[in-house]
Image (cartoon, rainbow, N blue to C red):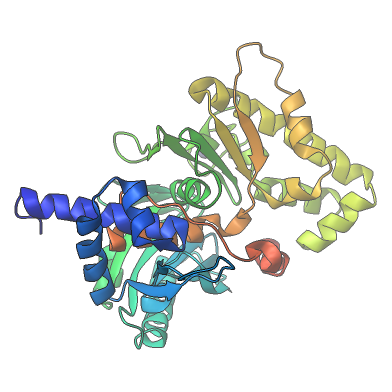
Length: 406
Ligand SMILES: [Zn+2]
């Protein structure tokens, strides 16, 4: 609780110092003073507090310069852990991250059910197990942030999840009846946009993240802030109508964009055309590499429909960075160039269009980053992944689609 101006300023300074220690990874007190503009005494007092709280530690930089090696400060990554959860259609992805934003554990559990209570039971079981696993660390499992593929109100209640037809569910309350851990609920695309900004596009203040998965959601970072709209529902662009009197969507309208341009719709169309029972990413990659004419035709049509919706979004927001999260486009040669070539309008302007490196982990990663930012009470957070986090992606993706389409 902030009780006065002095305490308030102290907290701002603490946040500023912590933020720079995280960003720089290794920094001396003198450099902290230079970068933050705070005087050395203030830095010293704050650093002493952070050391006492075991949130940072002192180390010595390895270098070849002659003379005394300066004492450096670093975030104490294993002091506590956060859990990011992506509650997608019939599957739940869990990522545990340390305080430096580095994932230390990840898994995806498939649940062939649409029953809300079965998901609540699964979440309670899993979150409890992670709490147990990390309880010996200084701060234990600090909090969990859950991404929902649907509309979430500003007070963190599920308003509607189209794929499950869940309406007005208070997931946070249902979990808190059984769990003591701090829980927070957000829209998945918002968490993904946040992840792109935190982990990849540190300098992009106007960033849109288009999630092309079981549906389509868009996370909007405008002027460095997430935009959630009046009720918290902004970015539901998968339900923009791109075809009048088109197919019936589970939102109640017809011709919604996600019926044509979600990854699920593409997989469904390919499975139908080739008369398959299911399709994995590896199998699809093989079909693309061997130039299967049906698959090529369906993906080209998919990219045309995708471009129609993207064109509308570009005209609405004039984005600096437009990140597309879709693993099929990553397998398809020159996908981004082909999509760009579909934008004929002289009005449509954007900075960069790119495919997401975080891919289907972005929601859970954004959830972890948000949990860290809140725990450390830093105004902004910039992280970078130390190892190639996407290396395990194909294995996870296999699980996803064999379950979705089986
Ligand atoms: Zn719809």
